[in-house]
Length: 119
Image (tube, rainbow, N blue to C red; front, side):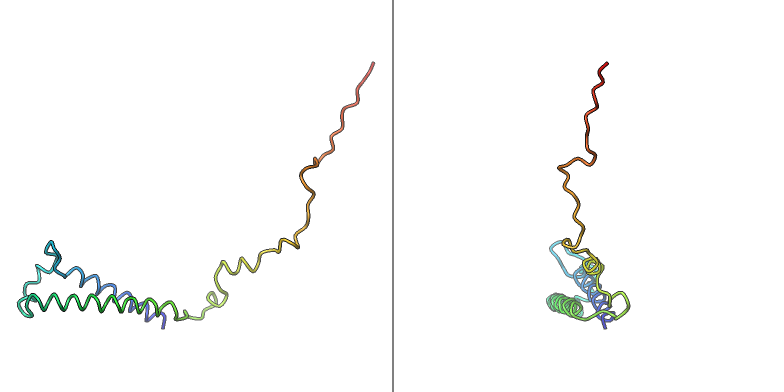
């Protein structure tokens, strides 16, 4: 199911990109090249259709993305274990159970002053 929703999201993105590129913008856009479609439906009806198609595809993209967030992925071995971060959190050592080391205020090797040699 997750794969199907992902494929639908990609398809909607491709169609949305094409619809936006075809729309007549202030600079003319790619819609100027499609004069035959303007003759069939009229300029205003084509713009209305493209605007409605844009909003419909944008809404369906939002819906599919929200739906994909709530659909569980395929149950393979890696998804049952959880994320890598969760695994590392579970494997961490409790600081209270770690060994206590001596503080660094005392030197590791005792220093003794050399004996003075008197002759």
